[in-house]
Length: 411
Image 1 (cartoon, one colour):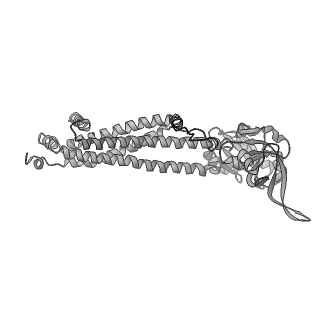
Image 2 (cartoon, rainbow, N blue to C red):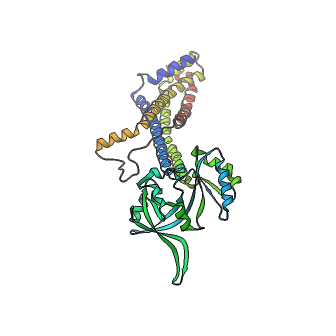
């Protein structure tokens, strides 16, 4: 009887004897399921691609973790803390830093920036500043009081390589003429660009220049590079008691708010697009309710021939789920193919309309990024199947409750 109910359910699903309206509603239900699942997989993959692109750009300059010394830490204590952190197996490389929030002044105005002093011989081990340079070289910082600016920050200040920019420190100096903020002129020797907000707010000087500028102010510590950037929070938790009173800050703390916002947007979009799948699932309810109404006589005959209510319900479960599962399967396949080729699809649309959607002069990207994650595919397909199962339960139960005597009374 299991094989019989499966055969009958599949025959009801794809039979040409159904009314045109029932066939149309069934096709619309399947199409809605296909579009919902495909669009959900594609959108999630694109959001993953944007997150990965942003993470790669930001972490090109930002180390995986910072060890910030306390203000009263002695040189011996700093050496001991550095050795303790570097002894952890997760830490691959480290480099000292000394940074302060300052005000930079140029011909076009003034803008706030975080000025960081770096060891140019070790900086390449913890961050890729040298690979992000548009002009100049990292070795140019050997000259005292020279600076490398982000390209966006340089444009806002109105300076380029070879120009001077004035740095205004959050400290004051008392003179016979009054109290004035400390300031110093720096020569721009390089520009960098990663295509993220760091281009508009970061500037770099040598460690020696930073110590002469900041003296005992600002924050000093170590920049850390890990084997796996995702180990940074675990390292911070593991070393918290060992490095106190110093503070170990992972990149998820310094840059995490942005990625948490992206993750929240991804969940929100997923919930919204699941609404499309839910609508398609309830269209299957309508299809099955009409099918049950059409097949009342068939149900009555089957009941008189000995079919149990459970077997009747199983027939319509098979009918509804066959449509839903086919839609989920086709939608999953379409979504995977589209997610893996979305850049080519966008490029084809650009050729058709004769316009560039992502102009690199306006956006930081020139193509639509996409990163397909199979866990997302499994979650989308699983949720869609679950919604489909819930949707077909009521029509199948209603079919099992039909009394054959009432249907065949006037036959």
